[in-house]
Image 1: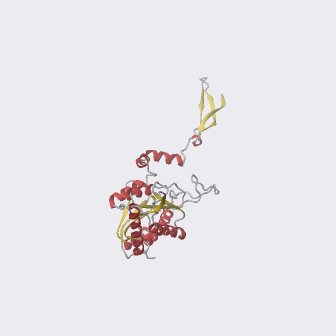
Image 2 (image 1 turned 180 degrees about the vertical axis):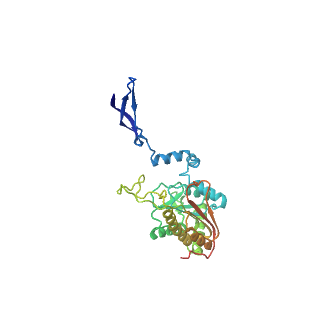
Image 3 (image 1 turned 90 degrees about the vertical axis):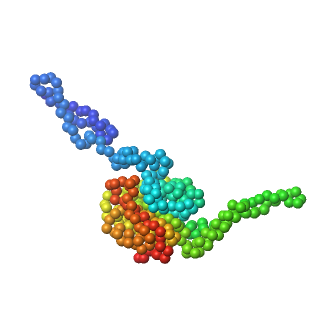
Length: 323
């Protein structure tokens, strides 16, 4: 005796019905169900689920959450700073591709109380406390000029006078503006900064950081340009090693050109790249501009990733980037 039976089986979180063949043997009245086990009934994990599982089991991701850091990438910069002493108090730091802001958090902490950190990114992101940010495409000359103008304006900015109330001879009070001791010190600092700007020919930056990656263009929701769903998506690497490598080289060269225009003599430069055939040429250019150049693969960088970092120390005074 044969009969068809329909049973329910889970598929991607929903119940689907699978047709099974019930066969009753002549010697027994018990029906045996032969259920075909198909791959369609197996629930495969989505890429988002795999990412969450990896993040949950990752030590640096958990530690970043405990410390209030924006992402695990902060530990990469912390390792490099611990080894090469990139930051000092009162420095001016430019963070290219700052979103979500973990490198800027490290820079603010290491340069306080008088340091200045400016982040630039095409993605709209909430800036960390103490960081000035500019949203725009860094590859655009107008955005680069905006950053340079901001640095010059900040160096030349004058401190406002503090109004004081003094009584007159007739018993009436009137307000006079006299600089306080702190304002006087600030004014002297601004004046020295202006002189420094003239001497350094616009080179006002102590450290240039670049953790940039090329963004992916979206395939849906073109009209949405909000904070939670920006038009440009951050790149998680394409899976094609040459494409990732070539894109990172272009971004590194753009960051190096910016550093050539704005970095002080003795300043430092750090950039992320994906390893490949062209990184040797970039290393040679760095060695012409800086006293020491190191390749770094921090312990916090995942072993399966091809990312690495150039750490270029102490810019030579007269050296500039040659095409």
